[in-house]
Image (cartoon, rainbow, N blue to C red; front, side):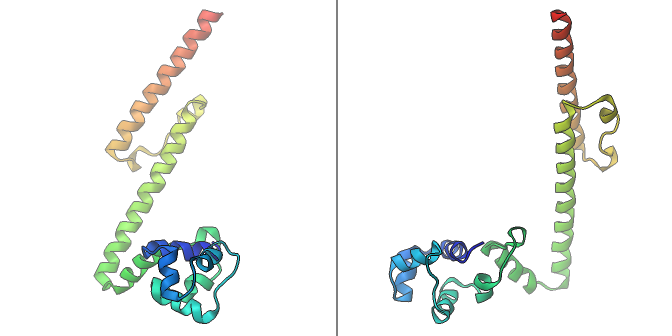
Length: 164
């Protein structure tokens, strides 16, 4: 993410308009716009004031990031809250994150498998996801989707026989 995008995100998160940030920095709205559009950048002293006003660190603006490594202001706030937790609190958060990550991964696998059902061969249909790893809701959803696919296959078969 560019400096300008980071500045805009931090300003928006702080609930400030360009003109409001400009007023606090004793500059113009055009200057803020130029920074956000990467036309120019503030000097280090001004950056220090920006960080104080927007409640972010200089590293938020200066640290290069890869797209998948980008951290939003909201995520930074969550990290700060996490660091303030005691050990039992962190353990609880870790358990929830691990469980939700596993659940989300299972849903992705299930969704991929379901999406492939319409074009699946008989071999694919014989190798569904591990039922023991599915929740009751996921099993019901999978059953209904399998019925829909079977109905579509039957309709196609009927249509082919009629056309033959």
